[in-house]
Amino acid sequence: MKKIVYLSLACAAILSAAEATIDPIAVESTVIDDVSGEELKSADVAEALSHEVPSISLVRRSGISNDIILRGQKKDNINVLIDDAKIYGACPNRMDPTISHVLTNNIDSIEIVEGPYDVENFGTLSGEVKIKTKKPTEDLHGEVNLNAGSFGYKKASGTISGGTERFKLLLSMSGETSGQYKDGDGNTFADQVDNYIAASNDPAAIAGVAYQDQYRDMDAYTKKTLMGKVFFDITDDQELRLGYTAN
Image (cartoon, rainbow, N blue to C red):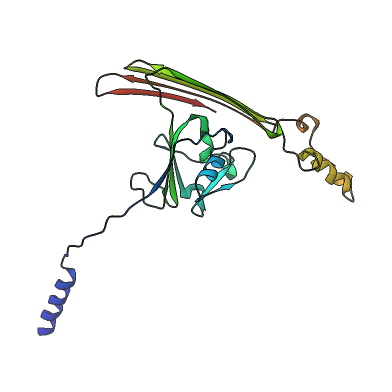
């Protein structure tokens, strides 16, 4: 009988509640307010982030629409939010990464939260990328950007915003294109394939891999986007927001 009493007292002591003080956990984030630098392609947010944030590296897929690695992890381990909406990658092998659904010239700010500390949005493991696009303003203003670069790169973009105290409108448009990459000898990918076929022991066997004539001189990429937003204050406490984006 005494053994049972002793055991009950021990279990009660173990199960008794105790107060504990937990030290505050500081979660640091990186905020980028000017991601649309003139030296960066608007169509590649991934490349812009890899230049600005040390913990982000680039997964090169093409001239644009590349993917990112955050703290050694990638794909769906990175939570990407655009205006608080969770974005997923599209197509097989993530040909359209989550980060490619917005252009830098439409971005107001990007916040990078490293680590699984977000308690507001699900799916955050290695970190979170919070993208906020531009909002319409009451004051009338606009901007026009023209860029040019190597390999025939050209970009034109424009934004106009304005309105009244209750009604605000924003319209942003951009288009950019680039020619094909050339190696040190001045050969495009099509030329390199032709050289490979010519140097093989059996050119006829691999002749089918050559570029067709209609594709040999195509641009490497062409990217166009249109973003429009309308904010309307219904009452002092109610606001209607409408937005449309086409890529």
